[in-house]
Length: 232
Image 1: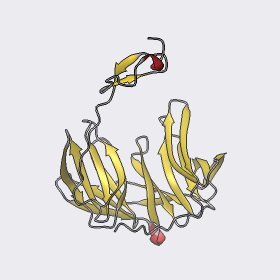
Image 2: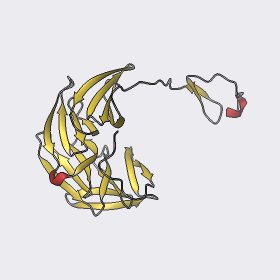
Image 3: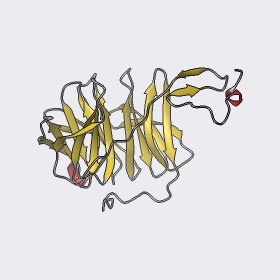
Image 4: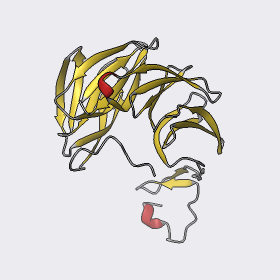
């Protein structure tokens, strides 16, 4: 077999993958899990045991998916859980209305912090070196650092309407992406940042550090979206 074309269109390729050279490898077995009571999925977090936490709207619940089974993990009683991070033991959830909750995994959550000035949380990332979490926010385009004890520090105040993504690399470098001009920032210190990239779009939706590289997902969305989504 020299290429994918050597497989007939009727070949059974379930559970395998075929590369452009015709190599066959074990692939993904995909399935579907119904999230009852969730109008939308707004965040996710893979736990050390391989199970997944799902942040949802419009009721602000966090669901636990393991071996195809769905159970309630926590209820923030807010509009939507838009960020989930963990230090490996404790899970924290950020909500659209700017609240940070500590989750106990038994269905309960405890609010530990509020982002000031009514800012909305749009993305979160855990910083293992500093033992805390970053929260990217709008509509003022600011980045905050939240300590597990609830202290909130302003790290960077951009000129963009929204910071829509944030990531921490293995070396501790912090990156944030904006909605407006679609800028990728590297945070170099409190109040300081360097523009690394003006993306071909107006929203940096996701940032994934990998070794010495950065993978950036950018969207072309037009005007910045409203921060009160309709979950109905």
